[in-house]
Amino acid sequence: MASLKGKTLFITGATRGIGKAIGLRAAREGANIVIAAKTIEPNPKLAGTIYTAAEEMVAAGGRALACQVDIRFEDQIRQAVEQAIATFGGIDILVNNASAISLTGTLATPMKRFDLLQQVNARGTFACSQTCLPHLLKATNPHILNISPPLNLSARWFAPHAAYTMAKYGMSLCVLGMAEEFRDQGVAINALWPRTMIATAAVMNLLGGEEVMRHSRKPEIMADAAQTILTHSSRQCTGNFFIDEDVLAANGITNFDHYAVTPGSKLFPDLFL
Image (cartoon, rainbow, N blue to C red; front, side, top):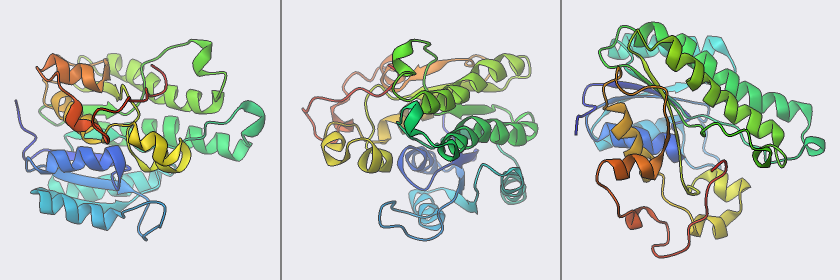
């Protein structure tokens, strides 16, 4: 399998969870990781900061740049991208992982929360892509990977939490449009989503707590799937809505037991599938 050694990955929300796992996986191969996230002070409910994540990336064998970024603000994105270019000389891969979640119905979703969901998920993904693309166009095998679900217009995914679904599908629509827009220029733009719940802070704090965590998989399954996608030729792998275990199965991995938080337990399926 091809390596990410020497590649520069700009990962939003890389202080914890899936974003951090993707960064660590790439760092073990000698990649450069730009950690573009908000957390600079420890939080009892949200482990890790951009600085502790950077330390872990370096310990894993990579290089790291910690950038405090709120992706709702273009100036912060632009500054982080400029720092990445100054530090590593370019950007090869953008992982749009940062996300806001609120599984609330229409009457229970304040407009302030609605705006946050759209600003972080759909708008933030668009803004990071727009800012990184001029640099990705100069890379030899450029990729954008959005951590977002396959598009499915079934009402069952909108009725319980229309605002959140709209926001996550906004990330997926970026894949649909940008993949075709930049196909001839050789930039791969894909989405990746988990088959099951993934053990993250969002699950612990918002999606069921320890009970759901016990029936989830570790973020490493998403990291291994991402590594597989990001090492493909960008001209031959674009416009796809990948599912983590399908990616790995296509590469000969059929036993996923080691990814389970509790091996042998029944796994809870993720949303949108």
